[in-house]
Image (cartoon, rainbow, N blue to C red; front, side, top):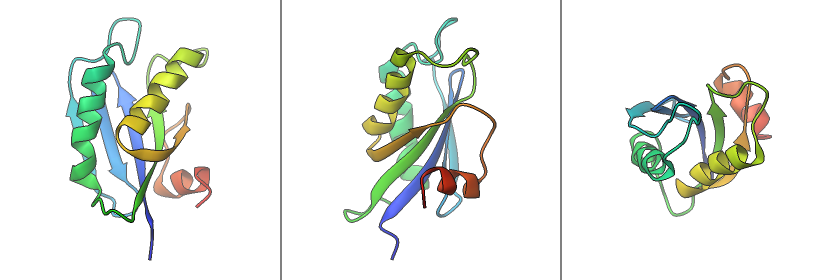
Length: 119
């Protein structure tokens, strides 16, 4: 029995997409959380969108733990600041994930997500 749900969360300007690697369900939501300088300028809006997407893709059970790869797709030139890293980690924790891995780079397939998490 698998005791965890693995999520791949991509964040673009005003758009969040969540894919559950285990069942391949995917959902996308849009809202006004980005600014001209920050991918996540309004944390509460981004967190609410992400929280709304989780039940659409992952069947939550009390014995299952959420783990997530969070992947910002834009405004990452030159790397992320400590503050941006914390924002993305807090988004993952806010949606209920126990383990967060932050990824900056090319898009990942399901096998790459699992490899990144050591599954």
